Image (cartoon, rainbow, N blue to C red):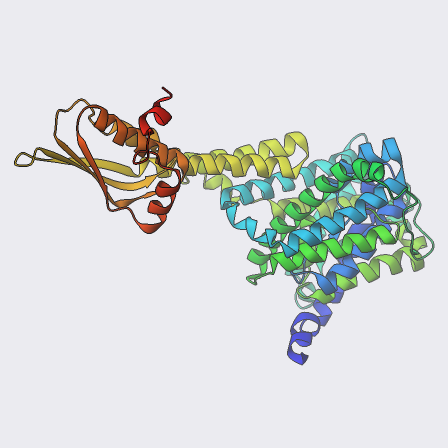
Length: 495
């Protein structure tokens, strides 16, 4: 117990607290922006970010990962808010949490093993592009001061760490925000600030049960949105967990993370917040700023609400250019630059999966669509590749007039046609032996191919013997095969 407390909470106190401050500063404008996207008051996003951060610090399965209100989730809420209002959004948030908890107990977090590395790389690159694109409105039709401040911010972020001693103690993104805010205030520069994004809340969130009818009609309204939010939230959280695992060389509990996200979203909905999930950008800011344990996530949530309530007069004066510089740093750090170099080295199928994932995510602004497209493509390429690893050879014994076919490899829907085409049904032999001792049958398509081969040989007058089936293949052949059952020819040939 004591060791777990030290490892998960107290092993990196200074780094976690400083990282929490940086993350909190970056969360404020994003939470406000995502609230505006969803069509709700900025308080909804800020309360959600505070609540989700605090709750997930205790119940999440990935220490050091930041969860809050996100753009991917906000995009799914637009229609619900526009047609039914905030109360239905809060109800959908509660249902989202319930669905995510159920997913955790059903161990759906393990499905991440079906997501290939090329899909993860495409997801990361697409997210980096979206993060950068989200900063473009702050850099369009603005005065030269904005460009100068942004450039200065990037200079501080990348050069400050080279300073002796102090460069290693203080996170450069935090220094960037403080310095640029001080400069903007001292010179009274007319530049867009956090205060221009929307009004900050002035009270702590309070318990708020959604004011909606508890009936089937309400469920039918919120269920489609809740399912979408649950899927996108878990998908983004699992992908983010994979990336943070790689950055920190530490494992995470995916199913606990699913349950934790659900609990956090229920808490958010009960405190007047919208649904959220893990944020790859903020998580990378946290890791690169020195955050490693659950304390950094808790600190981000606590500092967020404290800043909003206590330091609101100062926060509203932070220039957006400073936060744009931080997010550009995140986009640059998030993008897998090595994937461009690897385009020449990796197989074409891997490159296609990665590029398609990027294109679909960027085109739709929906991470779920891109990952789904990537996973489907990867599965098709894999099935096609494995389907080629099947070989059928034959030997003829003149003494017994027997043709023996030796099948090697995997027989399933992708290789079934090749399997059937490997037999010479017109050859006049008395006996045919199909040796499957080095083959495996995976599905009913493969069983159907075996049925067709056996029945065609029998139709030509040959005696057929199937040998060597392993236990798993024999089970599926016995269950679904018809070549040794009455009226097999009629069943298979449709006569």
